[in-house]
Image (cartoon, rainbow, N blue to C red; front, side, top):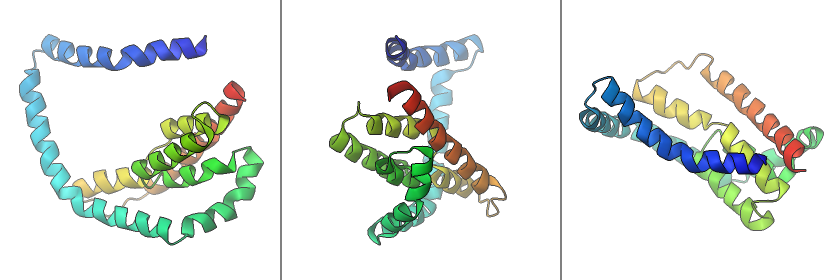
Length: 178
């Protein structure tokens, strides 16, 4: 029942949003196409401005993974994941997601290939992917685009939100699919 409802919502959500945005613009008397192209121009200039931040972050992630630091950190955190009932196979994804959405998707794809998307590990990884954020990527892009150098509490708040998302993903997956 729940999966049927979620499947129906998933099928119609994107087309509905794509219909509602121009309709809302029409009602508000906004020239939707012109607003879209103006936003696309601004997006291009923003993308050019943030390229150095993205390159630095992607190089750091690559060094982190290739150096074996990910495996060491995985071993250190394994007792904690066992405590909350998280499958240890999902931990690399939980560690990678705040750094890189692409890296986390790669790890999730490996989990799907190894264990299957309908396994508890696959479903936990899927829920975790949807309930966490690429915190460092977002900070690099948004703070970099407006040249903010002091992040204040943003990193801590983002990491706390990611931790809550990870724990919630484990709990929800266990309740719904175990």
